[in-house]
Image 1 (cartoon, helix red, strand yellow):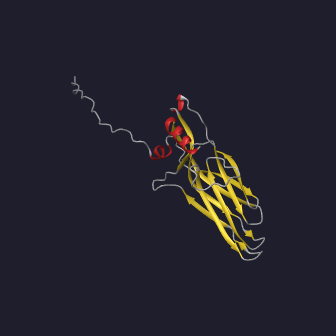
Image 2 (cartoon, rainbow, N blue to C red; image 1 turned 45 degrees about the vertical axis):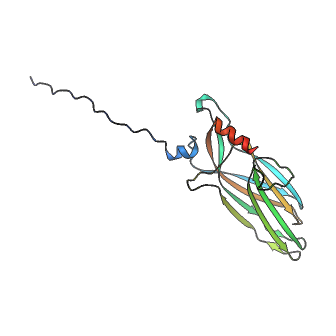
Image 3 (cartoon, rainbow, N blue to C red; image 1 turned 30 degrees about the vertical axis):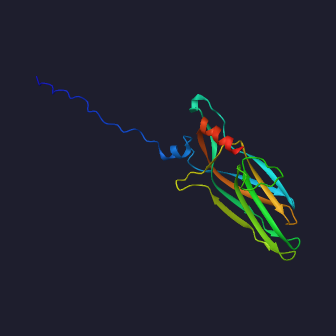
Amino acid sequence: MNPQPPSRAPRRRNRRPRQASESNILTGGSLDYKPEYMTLAVSAANNTSASSAFALPVLRNFSSGNGSRAQIVEVIKVLVEFPEIYAAAAAYSDLRFHLSTKNHGTTATTLADPDTFLSVGLQSYFATSGNAIAQSHQSFDFTDGMGNGILIATDNIYAQLSNVATGQTISVSAKVIYRIYSASVTEYIGIVQSQQ
């Protein structure tokens, strides 16, 4: 009868603490790593300002099942398109496009307003009627060096266009590139209070 070899105690392994994945850190746990986009458009008649509201595609759910966290939008990039403009008369024209977290209606906003996070201007001088400005495309990157964008915790964002001395109704379009970020209750409340 062959004797059994002595049993060995199981070897203990030193386990390092599990590190959060890059996508988990970047998105606050939503894991929505790949960006999406939404389209905005606003029109304003000559010498007026107009605003349009756009609902953000997020869920407000602070149930214990998701760790008392809420979805908010992280804006990564905004693409803005100004149309080609033909002068109706000799004039200095000024177009201002803004994105904000508050509805300013027909009152022209500026970047000095704490709720405005994008301000784009297009100015020109028309020497005579019939002069034109070519269509303009502009891109704005809101990320830092680590790929983090700016967080928007309101239910809507507002696009405003101020149209001065173009002699016509102007429409401006934009694409907002975003991803969903999962925020804690404290973080959510703090951001909302600062943006309303």
